[in-house]
Length: 249
Image (cartoon, rainbow, N blue to C red):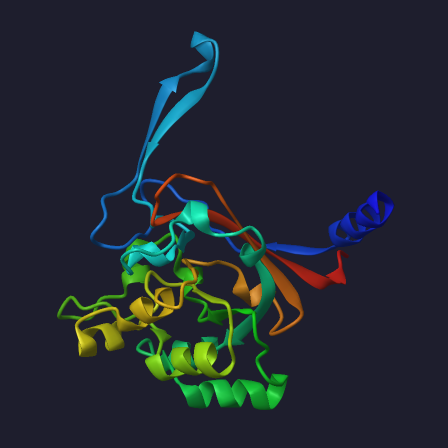
């Protein structure tokens, strides 16, 4: 058995790996209700070693949201299981639509169009919404994309699409390149993040502020969401990456 495991690890290491995570700092985009992160040097090499102290909201940079983020009496970060953090990855590419419509909201019809080309969305998968919004990182103004009245213009998921994915296709989790699950238009219309509430009410997690989804195929890759284990945390920066089926060139 150890020999078989060693062969499996060697095979995986020979595949193509894609980092889906932004590096973040005090000046990078974040949800407007949070303060900028602070990085403080506690000791430098002249004092013997280099050590820092960090202060930031749990939902900062590329991060994972646990169910407790929105839903009372549900799971925290430390209660998520290792195996549910590694899933087959499906990437729905709507970057062209978003390029022409910053208010784009994914609908069930968009999912049907995806399945017509790529086949049925399988159960127990991680579905990521590619909008190429991550290419605006780390420019805060470009990321917020405010109109003349000061409202964000940001794409996202629609409720009908989310309900279809979780209730009909039985997916496991989702991710996206923006701050929120809901598009800014959906948020303005509903006055609340009903899509995000719905997702976390499925007793699952989501990954926000993802990067490099343009380097991952629609199907065939696996996503790994590696996160620290703070006690009773609603969210935390995550190191997400994908392993693709093709060999590294």
